Image (cartoon, rainbow, N blue to C red; front, side, top):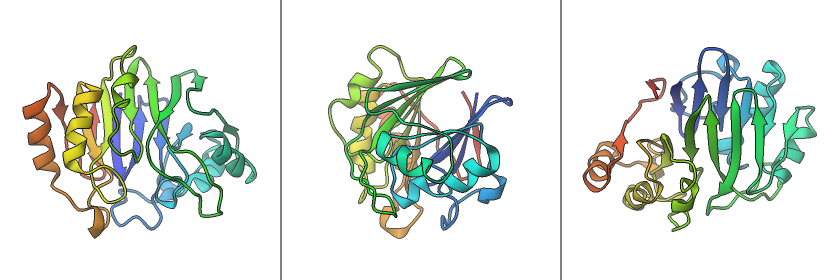
Length: 224
């Protein structure tokens, strides 16, 4: 599996046949690696409904025909746009030919640009037998350690920018709780308020845990 960082909290998981797109905030994202019309997707997954995560979901889904997985209130809003949706709640799992995705808790807030209040989530993704955990915009909380209890995490996609999410100091503790083999930081340096030193985060995590940290610039790809 290849994971491509597209900027902010947006990632693309692909094996060449299937492409899972997460939180496609591209329009208005100064760090976006691609334009929304160039985004590929066979499935779109959303952590929550803030504008910097829901982003170009509807336009990409309509163009590609990709179904969207989002927590029920958010899925209902998106479905009104004529998009195919799956609407689990926290703890719910949706299965596909490529694997499955389960919504797990994330401590944050979320209201869509249209005013729909929805509960944020993290995404536990099994993509072709590789387990990926996108933490969403969470703050640090101890139950992060429960996510990988039954399913060890191969790759964690982790916010580190602070202000709107946990900062890089809290994210070191989060990395220890999650225990992923590899951690890729996200949700930082998109805007001045979330600027942080990703290389310092890498050094701190690798000193405190057994996880390997890979820092990707927008557009770069890591094989897992």
